[in-house]
Image 1 (cartoon, rainbow, N blue to C red):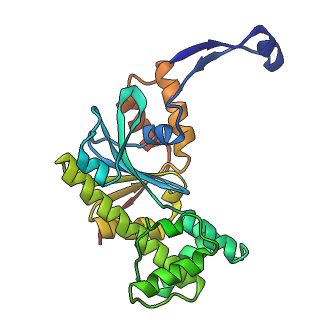
Image 2 (image 1 turned 90 degrees about the vertical axis):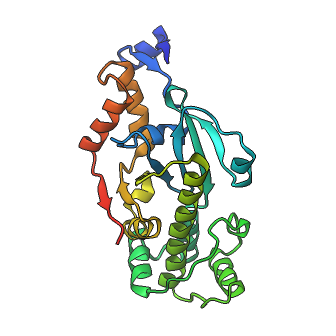
Image 3 (image 1 turned 135 degrees about the vertical axis):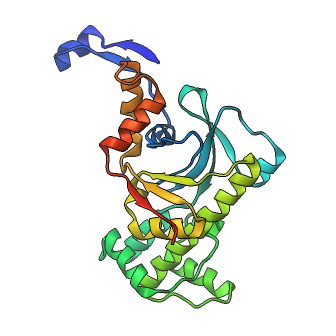
Length: 256
């Protein structure tokens, strides 16, 4: 939506004038615009501190089944509905990294997780993971409750996080397909989590879907795309999404 132009005072301050366009103004709404999808129907995860996983729909779904499974209908570009679920996301890894006094980078933690070969899962959406005093201790307690091995090393703890998120993505994809009556062969991951190579591979394996990861700066790209559509650089969102796929690195992961 065209909002207006700069005031005379602001124009004098910055040295030029310009059109001001209201983009998809929620960060996830802009991130979903950046999905480089060529297919009409696709799954997406806006992956960062939280994982927002869902599909685009033309009509909202207010069914009791959707409520029970904790799906929401949020606004998107061109009055699309972002039918999605909020999943815990990389908040768990961020908390663990902080508990280890930032001795390890995110990439180092993923590498140690893969090498550990631990393979235990917990419920990634357990409410106790939202704001625990100790994320490490809470993960260990949840493993103990399931009768699983207890992770001790940084690699083992992050391995639990990675496998638990991948398993949660699989379950959510199955729920979406059951609730929409559609099959989605492709899963797009945008945002910072698209750089987590180990997690992307686990996600492809768990869901059995082709995973396309990128762009990393999904929210910024989506915001820019909407402005470019308004400027007639692209005719529509489908043309713009194709350009995103050609302009940014998008990694492909196939189920093993």
